[in-house]
Image 1 (cartoon, rainbow, N blue to C red):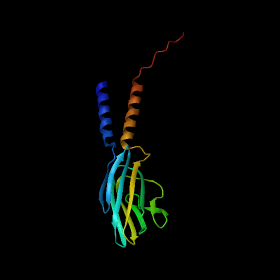
Image 2: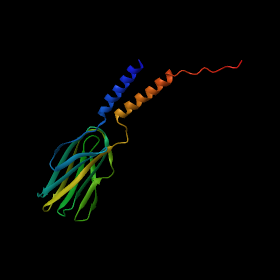
Image 3: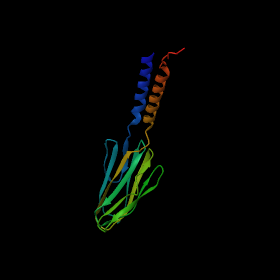
Image 4: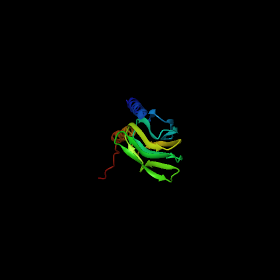
Length: 180
């Protein structure tokens, strides 16, 4: 009976934990993308566009993340001809605007004001700007695990607490000698 119970608990833990891996996919993009690349638990999507020749431009990147995470987005150009007018991340809980950190007339750097925790969903990054000549842009989206444990982690923790409680309940208490 004990072996059967341990086998059922182990199989349940394996089945629940198999859903723990996050998957990030790039659904569509008007830019050249690299990735998603995952190192340890952090996933990065790189994006570039080297052929911005029209006076105004709008570039989009649509991606899906299957688990919540801490998002950080950067956007940069070293082309003096490029002037970003807005960069917005839309999706669950949004929109979230990127803010300009540096614009020295030659290069610009934009990012989210602070990394934000977003739920599993589909998101779209939209970059708008003006171009007075030939220019390019680049950037990255970084997704790290959030501080909130995944559902599989909670399930395994609860199974562990249940097993400890079961073991403690089954333990026989020692008989103490009584002095008459």
